Length: 329
Image (tube, rainbow, N blue to C red; front, side):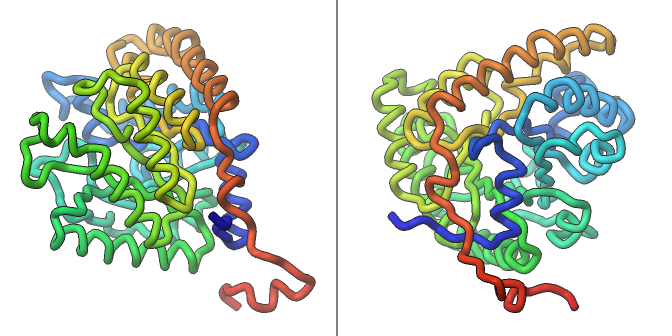
């Protein structure tokens, strides 16, 4: 398969968010979902200031060892720039309004008002993240989602910033906890990835293609990851999907051995830090366990992952390249 070519701006941004072509990115774009983890009994008792403070601790302690950070525009992206905690690593910023725990489930993604690709680029970020629910069998909703993704792809092309697309599958005909849905998971994840890649996403942030609660065969895990890699023409990274750290570590290894270019991980890495009400205890946990996890995951990625540059190349340039490079006069 020939390498996909990207513009010079996207090419540089991809390198800024990776280390040697490999992604070790910490995800901390959670909003109301974070409140629920910090105080399950009374999520709305968690103030905005408490969320900002929590994110600052995680980013400044654990994030500094990553190739990049994925943050939200409300509580962390601008704050992290202001506090100089992300200015030496890559910065991805979410575009959508949807949060992981919105109820009812927003089948059609809603983009945050007063927020756009142009603003993410303007603030100096290195990537746009778009999270959305997707099931190729749910044809009408899938078409609506594809139209939104295509518009975001167009905007990312205009502003020359990579799109990290995150299609999350959901049950359509089968119950979420059914054996049939678990069995069909690999097909849904792989087909969804292929369709979104074909729309022009630069990197795919994907779920593990098998439900490890229903399938313990690591040979089948590896085969599903290989199938996924072979069906798309862009890099993919593994998301943590709220699994425990040991499960995520194992998934990262299998995924990277079979074509993934790293991970964008969230609660599996820092989730237990939410349990501490005393900041000193939280900071201590992050300095020890949090950083140890990043070191361990980084070692796995460095040993096994496929560099994104193996599938993406920069568009050709010449001494006159700038004349056709689009931009405001």
